[in-house]
Image 1 (cartoon, helix red, strand yellow):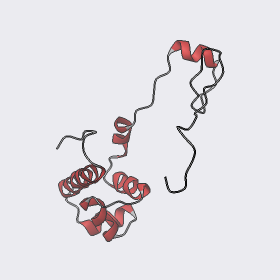
Image 2 (cartoon, rainbow, N blue to C red):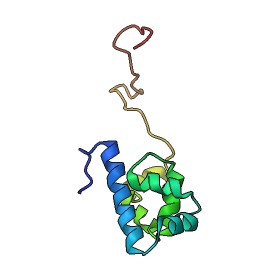
Image 3 (tube, helix red, strand yellow):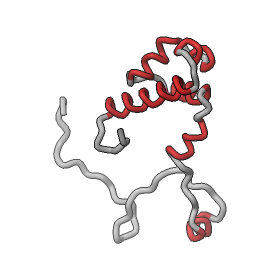
Length: 120
């Protein structure tokens, strides 16, 4: 199955779990062996492989045990800095997102559509 943004969160978790299970089997490891090597419980590994929600750190431990951590670089690659951006920042790294500016140069403020009501 191809991972696309149209898939639900649950479908993505199931597919990632199935892929990890195939990698484990290809590495000729039982669930108990991989869980021991990853430093997690066998039940946690079972949950990951079936697509149940779990801590992100548990997934990283399994990826590390299967020697797949380098694949995270492809998952969320580092953004390259353009020369113009580097000049504007003068060597400083950007720490937070900015607000859109209005024509007057001031930050635009978000105004609610109506008065706030309890329970919305």
